[in-house]
Length: 612
Image (cartoon, rainbow, N blue to C red; front, side):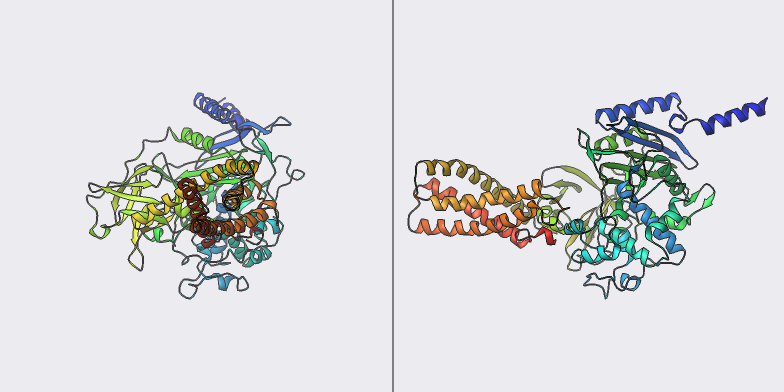
């Protein structure tokens, strides 16, 4: 009778639907709580798993895969996993590295001699595959014109040719981390050039199929993959098509919750899945470990490895990645210390807040938060002088440098031998010194940043972004001058928007030309912003927004200096009377000249997005 009972129990375990498996009161409460979170954020559908080394101990699906046709999410429903695709790419590279097909530390110039890129430090700091996997290549992010000329079927070699302007190392390879999709596209190309099959085939045969991810695909279509969930955006759940982009190796993989749970099990088990050692445990450890950046050399725990982020979750170190692609949003993580992992797949790309809350709920019952690394008794003598203003050295996209250097100014403030970090907008967070130049933030258990000196003796603060110390007065001058100029330009625009029609109606021609040119200047500035924000479409080579941005930029520059010239000339000839008229006209034109000069310097005015 015992045997019969055992057999019956096994039948129940193996044949009950996974979405209903292990619905203990605790799991029922968990399911209800997650459903409440999803409803509160208006998320159509989700698939979530909580994993231990041996199994997915809890898996559940929620809501609709297709809202219009009322198709619910099932365990077979496929979701786009976005940048989690990078983890698969890195794993495939480690697999090829183990088999001697590729060496991550050989210079790219030797691995793919025909590929063209620019690295002025190549003689002393050659660019290597490992730099691409750790986002330390210094390459710019893919430029906009790529997306108008290439899609998911474009050969890698052509994508590389179209990306020549972005394949330019902005700093010594291996110095700083800057997240970069283009780098992973290059990595896929390099891998494919050194194996005897296509990149996609290699990943499928050596990673996906052994993990029983038979339905996973980089190029899903509704006809071939009818279980692909629809994807949405915004609180109104606007339908989003699956992207047809050349960066598919870095973001285009789709799979279901079971496949992702298997993948996390593989990582938790050091490369072993279902009793088979798919990849050496040393390779998994290497994926988890950053090697190349200055932060890595100072043993900062939270530095990006190879396809794996490191994050502080509930006081514990978790490895993992997140992703967003089209209308999908995803996240996975695992803790070696706790022996658990999670997967969250959502079909609304604007659900970051929901993912954060779900993750907190999943992990809230873990062991107590560990004690953070103790603060050092005193600051090392060589760190005296780190207090001050810091400006970004690195950005993901070079095009945003002009903006980030103003809005991402940070201040390290010393107060009675303790430090806190303050942004230019006033947000504060305590910095706790743990020794060897390393600091952790108040909500972290391990060091996340380090202060070092460059070759010229200037302090650099290396956090997720690298910063360079600058004089405090210079930081404040840049920021507040920019704010002042923007306010003046806005007020001048509003004043002239009222004054010009009145003068035209009353037929007052005095100062009309001067005011009209200044209005053209400030109006062109706002036209630039509107053109890019509202009308630009990177999927079109010559989109209306790109053309108007170029035209408004040229008009802004010419009319700014033209108005200043006319105002000075009019003041000299005493054409302009009244202190108020002189003040607002002169102030408005000077502000416009400052901003237009700044935008010329950073290459924004004259930017041809169809060729960028």
